[in-house]
Image (cartoon, rainbow, N blue to C red):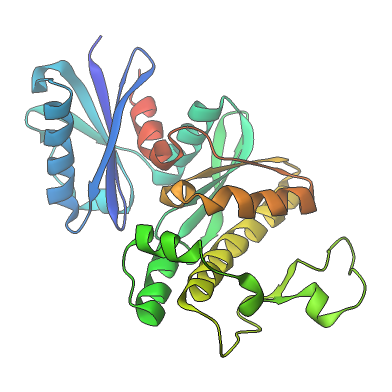
Length: 273
């Protein structure tokens, strides 16, 4: 059986995976400064790294915001097909978790929320808060434009120098919220706050915003499982911060293997006849 390629052209990165016999082959990503160039570059790199030829590819499935710039009917003679991004998010999230009922959160430059019931995906909405927010705020406030550098700095941070907590405003717990729960992101920025404190505060703001919107989605839809996908899932602190919300709101946040490639995987899987 030939390989089906899935390419997700996002706002900042282009991701590509291969699928053969239902198995995922060597996911990889490139920067998406130009959608067409990055797509062709990713395709060539995939072939080279896997020692494959064009003749071994059955079709190329495109998705993502940048896929609209792909106007040709083929790629080096291989047929191409475009699929709706939210359908690809749903298919990818279900493929890598085995679930058929969940909320899938795609955390890229911004964040999209997709509900899946019985294998059917529906876009619920989204937020502009995401990886672009993280890089934009840290770039302006700290002069850092690398996620790796932001994470390294954040590991030295202390949220008590940045965020206002329930314990800062109340002597007793409110509802089911303990003293450590955030009452206001950046609501208590100390004059002595370090760059590490600020970096951690921005990370916390992004993940808490995304997490709470996911919580609201589960309550509206009566779903307990939330599948986290996209580039931000690779940040180690994500697991810790989402675990706090998991315990507080009695839902399950799942970061599966290849979570950052879920949309590309979904696109490829949709190409299987």
